[in-house]
Image 1 (cartoon, rainbow, N blue to C red):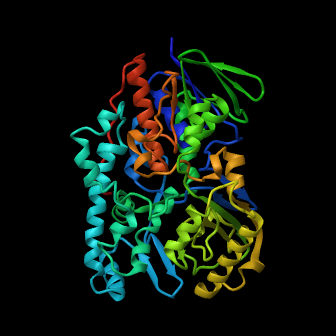
Image 2 (image 1 turned 60 degrees about the vertical axis):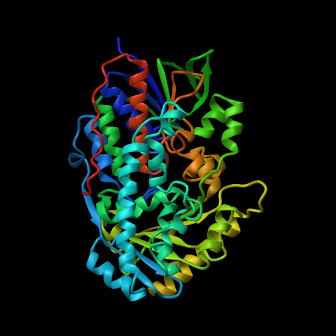
Image 3 (image 1 turned 30 degrees about the vertical axis):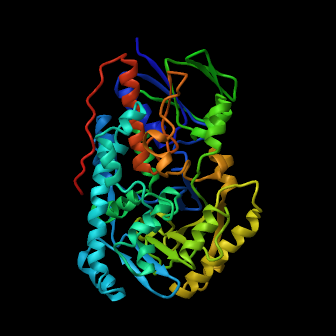
Length: 508
């Protein structure tokens, strides 16, 4: 008889864990509160416009490939990827523009125009990022730690220092670049993880390495195509998805979870349970585990975002696929987001125009625009007038697009606008404090020090997703699914463990 698994939540971590468990002989049911799978990696379709709600960057393709391979499939049979190069067009408020590209010659020309020594610094920075990436995936991000002695072992300690885990990213970048704008151009990527480069470990130079060496890609059909492909394979393996079924309570015994109850009163029993809802929400609302919930509440959280999804009845070909606008005092802006929990006086923002690459993302001759403006998470102790902050963010975007791209009439051509802000992230996705990326990643919240992927008391309750080990970001959450599955199979021993291929570390 097959062992039974219940997965709470059909985010990418839940889907991938469900598929891996099914491939290894489990009978799996996924309970999802929404009408569709994907969690934050969902989509909006309206009037012929298609938006990805959350992530828009397909990074670390080898981790995706390994995920598909582990469930008996080839990624290339399911996803058509196009490389985006230049990866971004970066605009500074003093008029400087940089195109970040894997074309080394073009990078040299651009960087030396800013500072004669910058290209040499860039080569050193990318080389260090390559080292950080390989060590991280092999020794830290890509493995489970079952006790603190494994994490701080004599083998691991030197690697922690080699990864510069105790150094701050922005400070470390100053070793390679003198110009403040270049330091910003090679640290803003921390915002993919909802982090400030002034607080993030220097380890995260690996992000720039992965972008330029392995590439930034776009799956035709949008990032949601990746969700659809994984769900299709999971269903083929026998996974049952039940939508519009939010879990309201987890029933526990002394050392085991016994069942879960959904909003419609149904009870589901299983041998193991995997929580893919946001981890603090599970501890606070579903278990509830008051002591652990309080500990999680006191941890550092990532920032949030104000999102504008605009259906536009005109094309603006000067807007590239990925566009970054950096503004104002870089340090002050992060202080205002992460300490003041508000919108910076001069906000930076990101614009995604998928129709540059995928014409089906918008009606012919029209534009689908996605705008992300980083902002502080919810904080009852701060004055947060979200209507006013949203209005100010919107006007900032209009002003800079007009000034720097000649997009002067955008306001008149927006057919509809959908806005997400921290309250929406909290209410729709159960994200604690409306923190769009979950728990933060500082030295004390990574590796073994991050919340574990199994409950300490309830030995059949596991977790997968952004706020557990190893962390946030789509490829890292895919690794979370692998690590959680490996731990289940190791600890439960109910079936033969399939050998799972480790992701290749060679750049594509």
